[in-house]
Image (cartoon, rainbow, N blue to C red):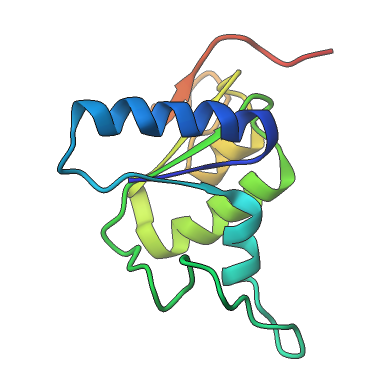
Length: 132
């Protein structure tokens, strides 16, 4: 299980990962900054490779991972970008936790917000809504 976010959402994600690890000690649960995921998987020609980290595209197999992306607003850029990237690798095993169903990250996992949209079961909402 890969739990990713940035800033305050990452702190929540780290605590969630710790609690989940306590309940399922045999499960591998990794909390990680969405910025690091973007850095590792968005390495373009001419950019410096992300080396020296325990997480890299060669050290962690993500094809079978379940990903939980956390963003209160549902549109934090690094987390949203990492969600798009990991969806290409992990497919429908990417889930979003956000303050509202109507968010860009929800759309990134296939959840549309119009009334007749089918529920894709990959969005968990806190119902906190957006901050003004």
